[in-house]
Image 1 (tube, rainbow, N blue to C red):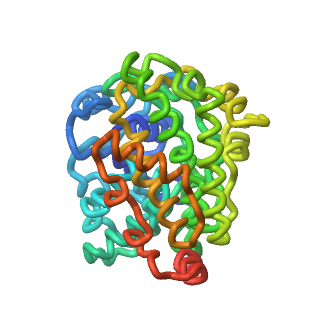
Image 2 (image 1 turned 90 degrees about the horizontal axis):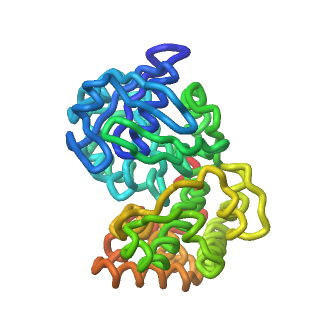
Length: 367
């Protein structure tokens, strides 16, 4: 590291999560660079961030996070940092690997926040395909540590910070050394056994597609003018969420991986104890006030279906584990969006798992 006590960070992605992370790292005193592929987007404006010198934070974390470099030049952003935090929708991971790969150098940590399902596997394959020889540690977080929304082009509102976020490196033999560095900024990060655990504990895929698809009429008619995780999580909608959760747990069991149930995860991440998913979502403080997306064309479908539900179902099919409810949601999203998510998603084949036995898969991720 450049400093024994304070590593330097680059945050790739200036959307809602990226601005929150970059701003918070800056506020905590870490030298932080921010990259985005475009200067202006729906949730950010790099020129405004540069003009004020960083990101203003409000909500659970108040203050101003000063940033060092804010740029669309990936070379400058990653050149002199110890940790590269990738905070983009998971469907962009492959593209980010292609953009930054030739500029990475030995010893850097590249952390996907989050990896969703198979993120580290896909990122590694993309670097290999590009011929990247730098020895970097690829790490996958089970979820984004922040619940945050953009409240301006250079501002972020943080609703909550998770109490515990499992991470794993690919291979798992690198997890301990990566965690030693990441814990300097984020003591909430804890070691998962391997990337199968972080990938199969993809709670966004369990929650978001069902909450979005089964509230489609409400989202279209109100432009998301209701609380997404509470008002949208009715008992009948939650019954679908619980079934998807059970199918995911069966896939994890077939891989020999310990996965947390949604209820266990809500307790671990937010300290919420409940008997049912409906009760838990109604009583998660960090979800209060988070509005539904204004349009159905959001990351809750465009990210969570291809990088969550598709690998759940595809790996399940390979292991002969039925996932009928998960497959139904994928088919419904494909019809509604006129997108073949099966062909675009992270299938077992695209992740390099097709044809492997469970033992071979576990050897691949364990090292």
